[in-house]
Image (cartoon, rainbow, N blue to C red; front, side, top):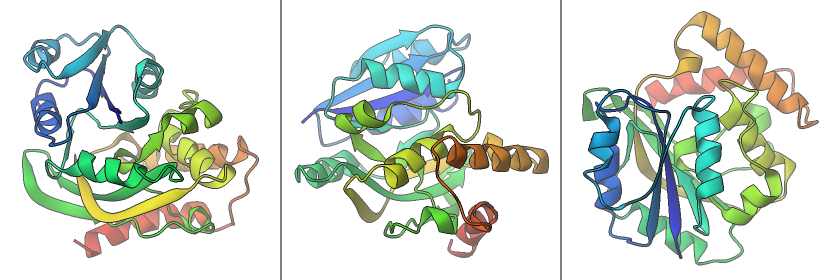
Length: 248
């Protein structure tokens, strides 16, 4: 069973080596690592060239990270598809083995797990913990969503629901998760384990203005899918993030 991992890069020379190394060190070897680069001007491509495990490199101008991810999904040949950002790493070398063991059950369409936020310059310094918990039909209505870098899906899921909606700048991952988890009746499995370390940062949380913009996009994500959040849903979503600091 081939697992396709998509990594979008743009001037990622300070972090991409860690991401590439964690993929190379996985004890599961049927991996198709696809790099989609937005024409970096630093040493990103040079560093990628030092890792022969990389199966495909697409380097060209794009319309942003979600456009890049869509290109990677289109280029992927694996039965299972995951996305690992260029500044994220897997927690240990058996993460993909764990994912494949889940998908040995052909009834499982989607799986997700837990995530650790870490310091930019210290992958061992945990800042926040994102412990997802078991998905229930009411979860998204209560402000829940899974950490996207921990989500793995079968190719047939993308074939049915489509790719990222690039008209959304900060909520495209949220909107795609709404489609996968809420709109369609897929069989979803939760792995109660931290599998990804993500460096702190993020456009949607960078400022109050950005948070307001993200909230508007979150509302649009429900609307375009003809789904209806409760009056408190999109207020609970950022509040849930605050609880991640308390669980650290």
